[in-house]
Amino acid sequence: MSSAPELRATRPTWADIDSAAFGRNLEAVASRLPAGSRLIAVMKANAYGHGAAELSRQCTPDRVAMIAVVMLEEALELRRAKANVPILILGPLTEEQIPIAAANEFAIGVPGPEELESIVRTARDRDVRIHLKLDSGMGRMGSVEWELARVAELIRSAPRLRVDAIYTHFANSGDPTDRFTEEQSARFDTLVATLRQAGITAPLHHRANSGATMRGLVSPGEHVRVGIALYGAEALDSGVSRLEPVMRWRTEIVRLKDLPPGHAIGYGMTFVTKRPSRIATLPVGYADGYNRLLSNRGEVLIRGRRAPVVGRVSMDLVTIDVTDIPDASLGDEVVLLGRSGGETITPEEIGGKIGTISYEVLCGVSARVPRVFRDGERITVSSRFA
Ligand SMILES: *Cc1c(COP(=O)(O)O)cnc(C)c1O
Image (cartoon, rainbow, N blue to C red; front, side, top):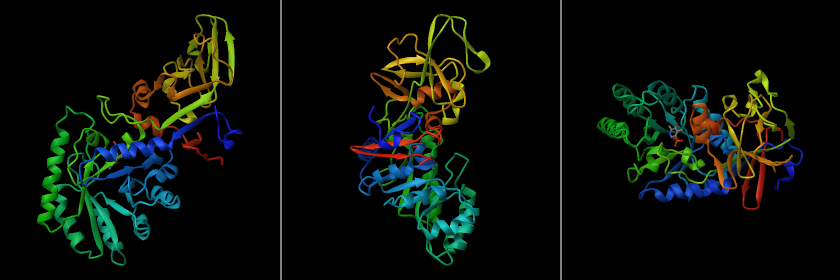
């Protein structure tokens, strides 16, 4: 394994991030959009665990119209990283954060009338750009129909407030059999018409997330907000839309031992060898985001073959059974997530085993795991220990 110089003195557990693949995914999504539609790359939660500052370098103005994050802190991080496309903060923001967001010229997603009141106060002394969110059925963020009169009144009262966009969010667009997405879409159109009657319009609308975008449910001329698909994970339950995986989480065998039948392994002695067994120890654990629910359930890849996790996942260590991979050796690369030879462990596979979704698996890889970015010859390491 070739490793960056910075990695020589680190624990051999890190996440390889294929920056170039992320760039190709941006282009692949953009190329599917109808005329006039553009991509808003969703890079909240540190780009779904991948590393937002570094990956934002791929977000060139020809590829994406905008980057969306959730927190002011995330937007400021991208600004420090010199992201050179506009940044939308989906929010919510606190009252104290709103003037800071405005001063930094971030667009602010507006979840409802209360936050809009604070924004209007900020807009007394400066220009503020907002993306007005409408609740088309999800019941979470966004203004509902009976709040629109108040929303319109607030916007009309603030001459320095610019409504750059009106948008909504789908609750179940990954399920092609669910009509709710179409219902939400129609509801959004109705709410937009209601606002228009109240004198409020915007040059831009956006509604589709990964699920809707990959299903082709994109209204021409509207932007799309795509997250998970850009990272090569599944947006659809049917599993037909995967772009290139971006993260490959790997470690190495640091201890290898032969145990007789009847030997316990790990906390709680939940696994006992049934045969003469070769057990390998890996320097990764639940503190790194390798979920403890993978105890006696997970699988990892060595030399393109699968090996089962045996015993409990500890905070810092995982034990695997390599008895059936006789050539497994000390120092071998072990893939926790991603490809090895002809085998792949997807975030959906891990999520399926522990009762969650690919999103949480990717976001769960903790800050203790360095991210190693590769873009052609360029290798950069992001580590909280650097
Ligand atoms: C996270 C998020 C998205 C992206 O969703 P994906 O399913 O990852 O594409 C889009 N819009 C909003 C408001 C979000 O919070």
